[in-house]
Structures are given as structure tokens and as C-alpha cells.
Amino acid sequence: MIDLDAIRHNVRRLAAAASPAKVMAVVKADAYGHGAVPVARAALEAGASWLGVAHISEALALRAAGIDAPLLAWLHTTESNFGAAVAAGVDIGCSGWELDRIVAAAREQERPARIHLKVDTGLGRNGAALDRWDSLVGEAMEYQDQGLLRVVGIFSHLAVADEPERPETDQQLATFREVLAVAEDAGVDPEVRHLANTPATLSRPDTHFDLVRVGLGIYGLSPFQGQSSAELGLRPAMTLKTVVSQCKEVPEGQGVSYGLRYHTSGRSTLGLIPVGYADGIPRVATGGPVRIAGRTYPVVGRIAMDQMVVDLGDLGPGGAGLLGAEAELFGDGADGGPTADDWAHAAGTINYEIVTRISPRVPRSFINEEDRGVAAGREGGA
Image 1 (cartoon, rainbow, N blue to C red):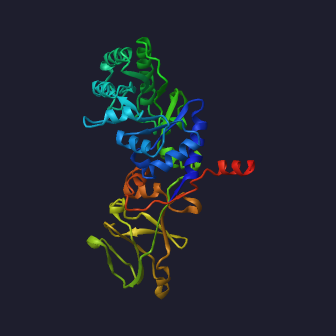
Image 2: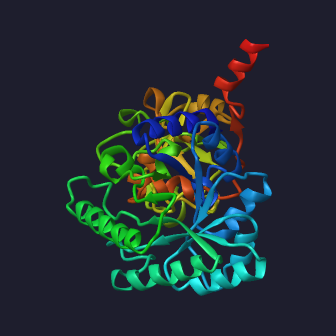
Image 3: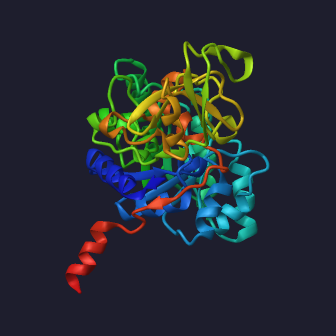
């Protein structure tokens, strides 16, 4: 279940933190598993000015859904469809090697491309190397003078903003200011300069520039160790629930799941939870929490492709009454319920991965699809 009111709340919270900079809602990877189209619409309703995705194909799906907001795609291969991006009015991130391909697409479409030049200020992934920046800017401006493109943005990406004590963020910021000065000296007049991700949006106002790119935060998850979503004023939007699909009494010493690494310590009732690693639950996350009838139980034994097991204790014949009971793996953490952070801890990973990997086999339902604030306004004006 995805709560779109939580998405709106989080966007408003981040927009307040970023102001006067604008907000780009990052909806790549199907909005971190939350559903790209409904999340994009909710984010725009709440004040996001831009949308961001990794791949052009993701951007085209948003355009096909009728979303016409400013939209940036920044991760490309030699197979990327730059022509379709230009035709659809999708802004294109450019690290250097793509420039000639983007220009060819603009000629073919007879329409200038909108590009954001990306520089690597220290993360070591995509983005132009610093020793190539001058020449990239020069080449881009030559094409701009020919009417083939417009350099509308300059951006980079931070490596350790989720660790505020690290000095590298200061170094990256200083480098970004230097490359901006080079671009401005070359005549670039960008609409937006953007560097900050969610953690920098919340902790480093000096990185905000014209636009912040927020991903994890709009889904209500904290990027910081030691700070919860609630402490940051964020509300987790995804709740993962199923039902107990079988309950059975077993004797002491009953082995559980592949490898028989777990055995019951006495007579017990085992509850079968019908999700597994094919649904995106990490196979290594033994001990992950499942809440049933107000009590939270750890997963015991190995998580399998389609199912996992919890040991409900010695419930006797009454344990059968839990058949069909709601089983919540994670949600907003209200009343001490399990969270995506709990599952990340069990799996030795990060909360980003927990929500993003929930597979398409798991049906998504959306609540609060209409902005209640807007709806209330309509009722008041009727």
C-alpha cells in the first residue's frame, strides 16, 4: 500500500527545507518501488517543480501518462533513444560522450535539445572529468550557437552527504563552484544548477543552488544513520502487508526451512508468510520483523523464493486462529511497528534497497490519490 498523502507531506517538508531552491522529485526505478506515475503526480501536486529519472525509457513512460512537467533523464548508454527524448521534450543529462549523439538527434527531430551538463566533482561515476570540463563546455556552446541545443542546467552528485561529518562534501561543493565559474565565463546561462540530494537538502543549505534533487526523502525514509524518519519530519509512504497463509503446531526440535538452521526450542506454532525473495525480500534477512495481531515476530530459518516462517510460540490449538491474520512486514513505524529500516538492518543493507527491490509480483494499492487539501478547498468553494 502506498500512501500518496505521505508523498505530498514529504515533498512539502523538503520544499520548505530547500526554499528558495526548487524541488526535483526523483521517481527513477518506478519511484523507488512506489509507482512512478501516481507518485510523480502527487509530488507535482505538492509543489515539486521538476521530475528526475535515470533512463530515457522511464521519462517516456511519464510523458505517455500525460505528465508534461520539466523532466530530466541522466543515465545513458550507446543504445539510449536520444531522438525520442528530444521529441518528447525530455531534458538530457550529458557527461560528454553523449554530446554528438544528442546533437544528431536534435538535427533528426529538427528541434533543439535541452541538456544539463554533468561534472564529476568526486563521486567517480558519470559526469565529465575535471580535465575535460573546459572542452565539453566549449563544444556545447558551439552547438548552442548553431541552435542545436540549449544548455539549461549544470549538475553534479554528492558522495557522502549522508555522513555530514565527512570533509568531502565541502571539497565537492568548492569544485562545483569552480566549474560553474568556468561555464559562466564561457557564456553558459543555466536555468538550474543542482547538486544537493536528500541528505544535503536537509543538512547543507549551501548546496541547494537553484534546484535540489530529492529521492529517498519523498518516500519518507531517512538517509542518516541515527536519525529516524519521524525526527526529520518525514512519513514513510510504503506499507508491505500480507496474510498468514498457514499455521501449524509442531514439536520441539522441528527444523525450519532450507538448511534446517533453525529448530524450535519447544512445542510451537509456525506461521507461514507467503512472500520471499521473488517478491524482493532479501534472502539473507533472517530475523526480519513481521507484526501479527499486535505482536512482532522475527523470521526464523532461511527466507525462500515465495515464503518465510515465523515462530509464534506455544499457542496450542488457539494458534490456528491466526490463519488469515494480517502480517505486516514494514510500514510507517507507528506504535512501534516494523519499518523498512528494521529490514535493512536484518539484511545488512540500506532502506533504499528494501523498498526499491519489492517486485512487480507484489500488487500496489494507492490510498489518498486525491490531494485532501485540494479536495477540501473544492468543497469549501462549492
